[in-house]
Image (cartoon, rainbow, N blue to C red; front, side, top):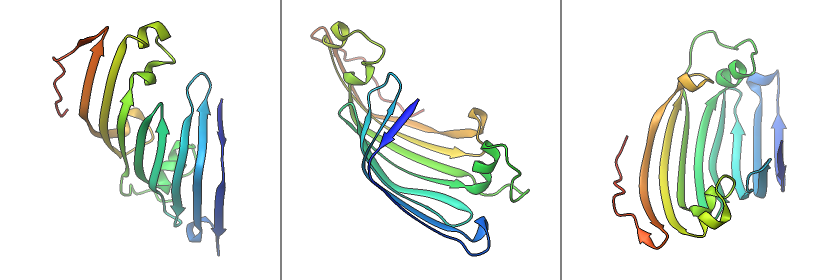
Length: 168
């Protein structure tokens, strides 16, 4: 289960159907919680739909003390395909794009899976940038890069100095 709460402002205008619709949504200071996971807090975003593309720009949130920022562009055809609907345009359009930056994630992100006694012995910090092209609403339809911008780890007081940041 996913639970979201917070203020949302939305407008929808349409003259002649979905293709001619425009939608604007603003979320300010919301939280999102999935069963068993810490909440994503302070969610702020502006989203729009122009009849053909959903855009989210910008998006900001915090999770376990780290900052998450992002933007996305998802063509309507990808959403329709993901929902199993008849695609409005049989010809493939531009791919979708998702860009996320995560800064200052700490060992606390491990809390749902690692015992508190282990987390207490860790001091970690990770920052990363993820860029994805979305060609289809499947794992095989994703193509992109993950860049680890920062990675430090101290375990039981011993710094781990063999962390090498590489682009892959």
